[in-house]
Image 1 (cartoon, one colour):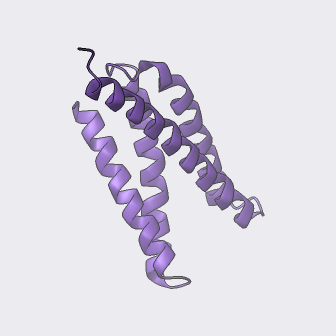
Image 2: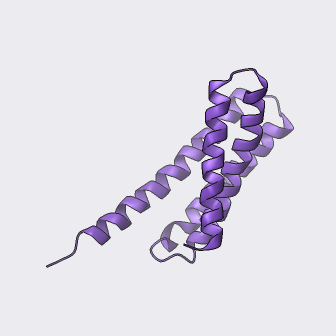
Length: 121
């Protein structure tokens, strides 16, 4: 519910939209714009949210892991931008880290939600 969490979630939505646009329009200007906006938005969102997890109730246990994964996403994105010569591999590594980050976050969300909905009688 913090401002930084809202900003992070908004950037995650922008990133998702950018990736969808890049996926639909292959080798056209919308593809480049979608990737140029979407990928950095996802990285910044993951960094902000992961950093925010350290203060959020119930999320503290995953803040280090998610932050390290987000740093890996940042490094992978830098390697794509700097064009070290393996674009397909770099993109797959980046997207694998995004999926890993999302999986950790969703797993924690499911556990927290289950804990809140199952009340002992």
